[in-house]
Length: 319
Image 1 (tube, one colour):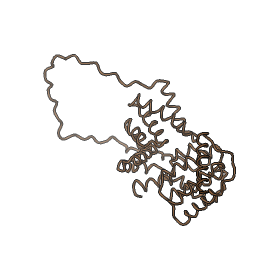
Image 2 (cartoon, one colour):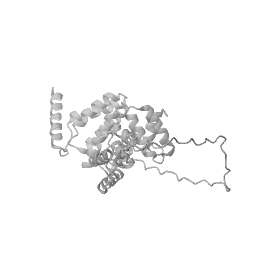
Image 3 (cartoon, one colour):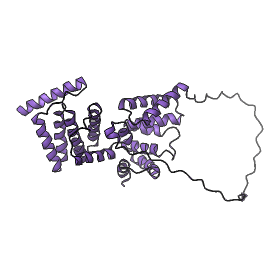
Image 4 (cartoon, one colour):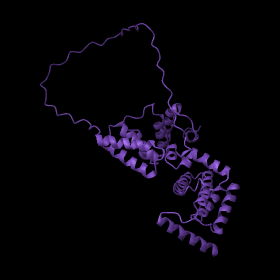
């Protein structure tokens, strides 16, 4: 009965916290939740990862008053979710970690054993897309791999001399044109595509800036997607607008939208291996494994391999 009362009290505190939109002043966690934290850690150590994840999730509720303790609990929860193959839960826990770090530097200042911190950061580098890490607080931004630079293409020398002329064996003879008929009145051709206005170009430049800055936050990325989406709808012929909308959708994990936009505008050239990789991930997460494999095979020769890329290569290609 006492444990139940404590659980109800914790849930009430959590509801108050969520409505207030913040974290309460730091204070020691209730022994009930400290016991849950120990139980969850013991379950993890003995390999019972599903039980560990459930127990640690409850334990984290009792750490809401202390950002450092909350971050330490969330770190252990993320590791348990990863071991339990709960990728969605892992990503949700990462979002909570970034919020605690952004507002209170809870993760940076958390009392975490070095091996736990190292294990978590290794999993984050492998599981979280590099653009998402780049838009996170510095503690997680440092985990994103540096973008690969394409190798310069060397021009091949042409052999000296004039190429030999070849004469086709059968040259088709021109066919006499039929007598000209009176020309019928032809309808006026439809108007061509409207070029991007200066205002639209400025908005797309802002989208490129938001996508290129490592410190872009989730709200800013949402705004970038909305702007690029409007430009892509107004200019379906603009490859730039389609690709920016696709990259912005990828950055906020809107997989179906990302796959659709990245395949518009004439497709992606081989000189854009990162965008092709984004397409492969988006197709895979949308359920199109065959299309994802084809796109990933195009991207890999021009990409620098990272733990994140290797993780998707194993999932998509079975490598």
